[in-house]
Image 1 (cartoon, helix red, strand yellow):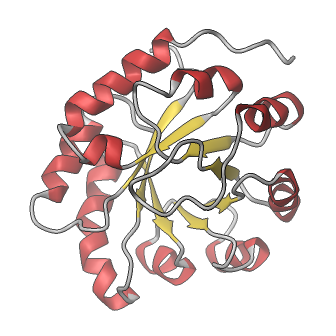
Image 2 (image 1 turned 30 degrees about the vertical axis):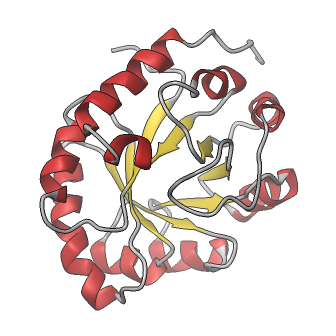
Length: 214
């Protein structure tokens, strides 16, 4: 299958108990998802690890990267494929030292070119911009623009993730502007997850091609 212009990066709901492992498997089986981020709040590593482990196995069986949100210690404990750091979640260099060269490190950069360039200089593997649309998953404090994606895609090889209120209906401009990955949560878990993933793929394939920056 030809590589899509943008790939899906699923973010978990805060509640991953009950039937969620089955829902995750169903979502991943609906199409080639690139990554899944384990994002729970208010739990220490000891409580979070048993919730993460079955989800990590589901991702591994489907060759989907398993990314831990915020916690370098949990990522190390699980042997996760990566960790995603907010601006207050620690230093990229320190995370690299603890996790090793092969672990993917992503950094939230809001709407800031400066934060993104700094993250790249410190060794991040990807940067995340947003929010592009109002989000039902978390409070929207920063508003990123299509121009930011175009700027980044034009000048930098480091992959960028678009996040914030993204749906199959509004994602096409982000694809065209240069988002390497679309980070989505409620748009998938708020309804039929397999149908939502399929709708995202249809929208990504139908998006107008992005300019050639080479």
